[in-house]
Image 1 (cartoon, rainbow, N blue to C red):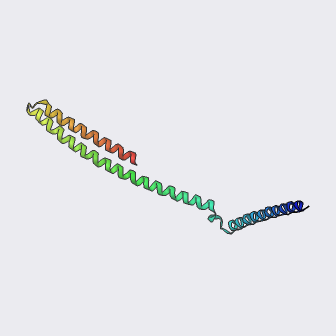
Image 2: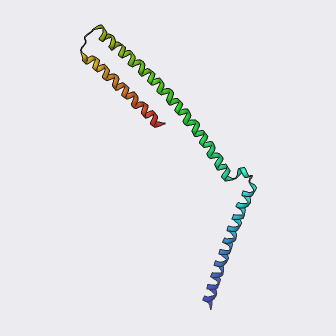
Image 3: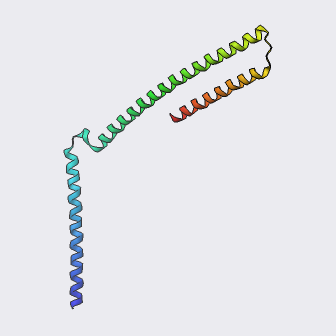
Length: 133
């Protein structure tokens, strides 16, 4: 009989704990719903998230646009410098050819190979800049 009473007492405590847990859950749910109703429509979390996402998207577009403009400007400057360098070198080579100066082909070839290597390095650097963007 003592064992039965202890078992009954234990089950009653379990039932009370379950009831209090259910009451606590319902109270919390009601609190959240009440807080959501007090917020104005545009201040609800969904609206706030959408607004923040829109602002972030706009900011990212502006940043990417600015970086792209910087990259384009940098590329134009580099290309202009390379064009000037190539025009000057080719002009001097043409003058030598027209004047009939017969230098050995190896200095000209070496110079042209150096210019080719420089152009390849500039192109490689430019491609890295594009990849960083």
